[in-house]
Image (cartoon, rainbow, N blue to C red; front, side):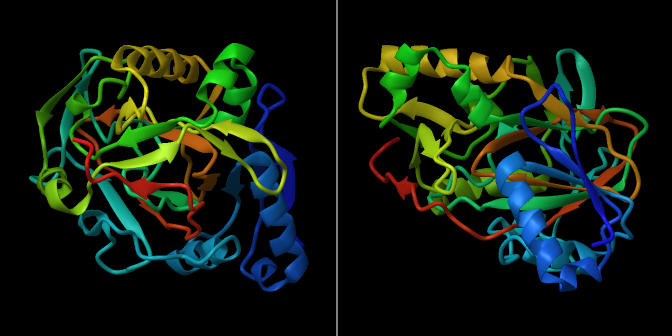
Length: 307
């Protein structure tokens, strides 16, 4: 194995850096097994010093799980079906323009889990920035295993066994979407199409509020502030109180924000980690491409009757 693996930070309980990985490493059983082990333990892998191509990105993804076609067709890569492509280019007609806490930018996403608004979430993805802006556009991560460990014992006892209702829609429909003040100045056709499709294609779903990592027995707070609507089966006032408390708890958790450089890739465990994107300058173009790793944890379900 030619690459090296080091801890991301002594101040974080998650994350490691993999340097110098080659396509030849991926053909050997020992490097593949070591990478899978680090993904399970650390939840976040940052790859540096590799020659990144779409083929290598997809081959690396296949080391962890089957790389699948993303279910949201509006963001699929036009040339590589197993990649999605997200372009922040507000001067084009197909992108959003957003004001976040008074600053105009593009490409912003609040803390969330991918595809949590469906009954089958993916296990992760490998992200690669192919065009980087001069500032902003950072990808942030929060470890929900550590977030669970930091919760008071009485809250842990109360939320075990509870489920959260999720529904796809614009951020203004999500009371716990984010802490920032957000205003959309322009909504591009991709999001408009997804908002319309959500009425028929993505009915409300529920996922457990606590997830247990099977291989280690570690528990994780399983909440995506984006797309969360309520906690199922408890009075609305207590549901609102708990979602407010838990969202603030997550927003105040230790986080890592990745400042992109050329030739880097990032893999995260979507069952365990939250991620977000900070706004990029509205006059610059940012392009990221990502794989989608199969592997639903089997805990979500449709809830057709919930509005």
